[in-house]
Amino acid sequence: MAEKEVSLIKGNEAIALAAIRCGCDGYFGYPITPQSEVLETLAAQKPWETTGMVVLQAESELASINMVYGGAGTGKRVMTSSSSPGISLMQEGMSYLAGAELPCVVFNCMRGGPGLGTIQPSQSDYFQTVKGGGHGDYRLITLAPSSVQEMADFVDLAFELAFRYRNPAMILSDGVIGQMMEKVVLPGFKPRRTEEQIMKECPWAATGRMGRTHPNIITSLELQSEVMEQNNLRIQAKYKECEEKEVRYEEYMCEDADWLIVAFGSAARIAKKTIQLARGEGIKVGLLLPITLWPFPTRQIEALGRKVKGILVLEFNAGQMIEDVKLAVGCSLPVEHYGRLGGIVPDPDEALEALKKMI
Image (cartoon, rainbow, N blue to C red; front, side, top):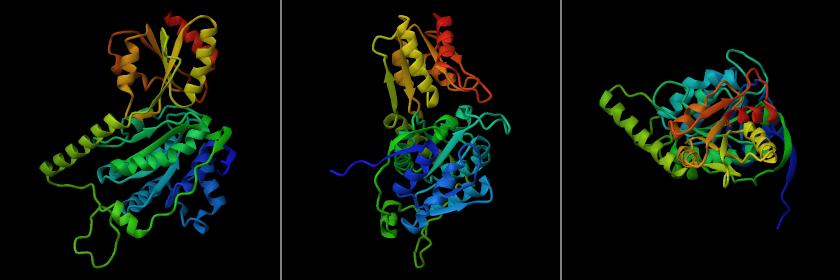
């Protein structure tokens, strides 16, 4: 058995290297702190010379997402990356992609806002990602890595889910995970798909080949209300299937917990240390870590909510995911939020004090 290749790399670099190895056909992006290393790493690796992957720095985020739209329409594995203000500019394009039922991967390395805000890490894009962000009744499949290893692992998973459900998938991280360095086992190289394989796997794709009697038309436009309603109902049924089959989460020390922390991404790393401190003082606390922010682990939180006395939601924002946690448990127990704003990462001791105030 060959030895696994272990690298000490940043989270943003892991995204780029995994994209090359996972058979990504094209990346279209624009630099913005704190995710610029994605584009820089791809440019340094020159994958167009090895795997044939196209890497292009577009003139803006608007151009990036529309290039992704074009590439996705041909059945290619395409992706982009940005940070919070750039993702805001991409919202219309992501709604178009969801409406046209096109698969793609978008990486968001969150920073503080609103507005231009700060280049420091935050988790304040939960609303604009998990709730859809752009116009219309659509969803983004959303994966939240809490380690550099998961940054690498989730690229292939995001493509897999995007193609399975013909929908954009988001890898939602932040400047903590994007900039930190950890040991990572990179995935192996996937063979690049042939045009024949793409046509077989993606019969809906517009290949542009001459001589096709009924060429596929990629669009999200429908002027007849009755037809548009049926399109929406079909998409909603697809989302329902995704909610039934694709919920992912992690439980940490929940077996005997009297109290529960719910946190995702880098906040979950803080939460684990908080739990260790709390248990050292005799306070039994567990963690529910949503890996998929959408579909959200509603049933799992509801089940744990029946066993604990209260829930602390730890986020680097003013309180966004807490809304979904409250919906999961109803009015059956207290649910409080603790977070810091402006790019400040809370200390585990601060989170512990917030927990103690509930007890």
